[in-house]
Amino acid sequence: MGGKCKVEDVGDFTLNLNCIVSDYINYRLKKGGYVWSTSPKITVPDNEVLLTVRRICDEFEERFSNQFRDMCSSCAQVDVNAESLNLVFEELIGKELNWGRVVGILAFSGVMALQCMLSGQANKVDYIVDWTCSFISKRVEPWTREHNGWKGFVDFFKRPTKDMEQKTGWKLTLGAIGVAALAAIFIQRT
Image (cartoon, rainbow, N blue to C red; front, top):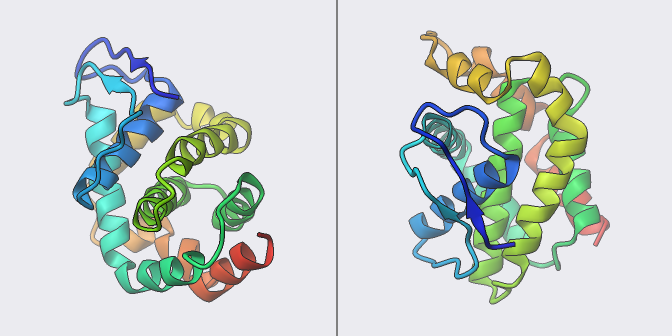
């Protein structure tokens, strides 16, 4: 927790996972008006991967703002822990992993970190980063390596498309599962 994320240059695609997750959560908390005091220091804030993650997670959260608000209201009633977060992540990735589902994991982590700040549990933010990194490392990184790593992520979201939902499977990511189901899973497991 804390520390420094070394990034060689703006086009460096070899970022470690902690840098990506920490940067996004720090960005999300700042956007919500909070300071994460133990956030790792990013030495190249204009890295293409980090900027793409922020932009795409913003789009995801904006597209599903009502669902995220409802989910946060439900999740505010529980004490977030690794097991409950992992269950939500498992539901988010479903049977077919894709970049849209990776975005869902990152966006949900950011929303949960913000929820922790709102509910006076700032100490949980470091844990959310650790739990998210652990889950992605075990369940998602093998897939990302097969899809050209974080460079593949950036390239995927650079390609123009008429329908972002078709491209990413976002409707499947949240729609098929149902936000109510995610919140119920989260609440039942805590």
